[in-house]
Image 1: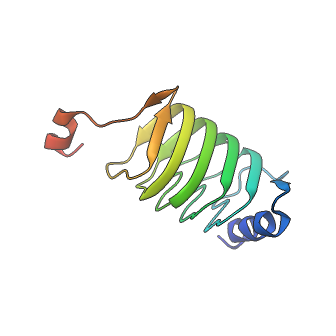
Image 2: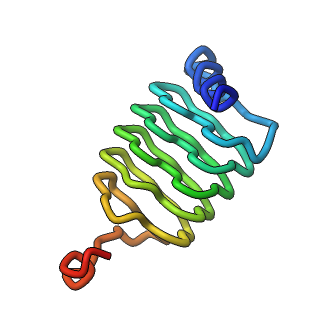
Length: 124
């Protein structure tokens, strides 16, 4: 978690320049990010957790991406799972699983994600 938090500090201090993270597969990249941009090829779990602003671009992200995010934007080619979000925006080409409580705008392969009425009734 500490390394992930440091990625946010680096991005915020680099702003308006882009922070290119060369280390792949770190968990908690962009933890509590408020401004700036992080670009990474492969992220571990919990990418963008509690982020409030800024932007993260990634090719592949792990579990619970965007968990508790309250702003900002995550752009990804592939996300294993999206955690419960409050606000913000997530754009991805492919998503394995989406958690139940979503406040963020989520676009999967260009289509806005909405839970079906039946899913809401059944609690899925």
